[in-house]
Length: 254
Image (tube, rainbow, N blue to C red; front, side, top):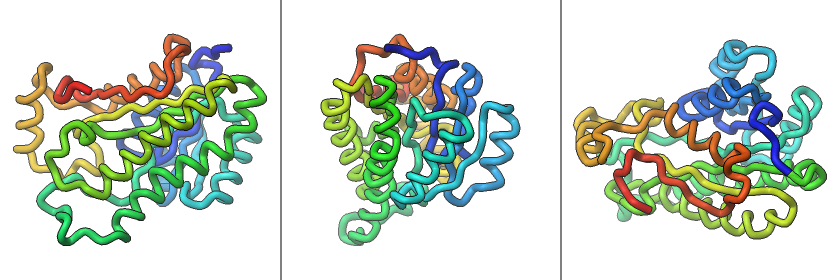
């Protein structure tokens, strides 16, 4: 079974700003119903939902809280319909500036668990809450957001990269288990995006260096990464699961 993008109901975690907002906008452009999840950014989420029209709505939930996620999925189902598609984009507070990130001798385990709770626990909460409806429909699309730092760990983002690495593992094990139910699970891994709130602290010199190092000679935008997410949700990716697609202009080859 496949569903066109216009037939899907999509939850985008961390969907109020940055890449999440670009993903929500891309799905809305294709006619999908879009649930914009937020934790603190209520105003931005509601403004975005209003701009996207009647088929988009903002929903509050801390994705680290399993009960809050269950309520959100129930609210989405009652308002927009049962979710067919999950995009796990939410990122705990983080600034992409290598000069300001702790190196190993300064890194606390609490910083690691903060990233793991959002990336991995959040994904688990979403999957567990949405799985029954997806299994009943024999259709589901789950897309997680990773990083090209797996292949090119040039900055000391130890906590962020480790959590995303764990999320990639969960993406693949979930793909193996959920495939027989008609549910695919894939990851889109961007590089540094120009520009999101998280990357706004990145010095211009770093953006220029990355652009010069890519075959395309430019830095990837949130809108370009969002279109790759659409691919995994689309009928064209119906035979693709457990994969990690790197979208960074060719900076690294995975």
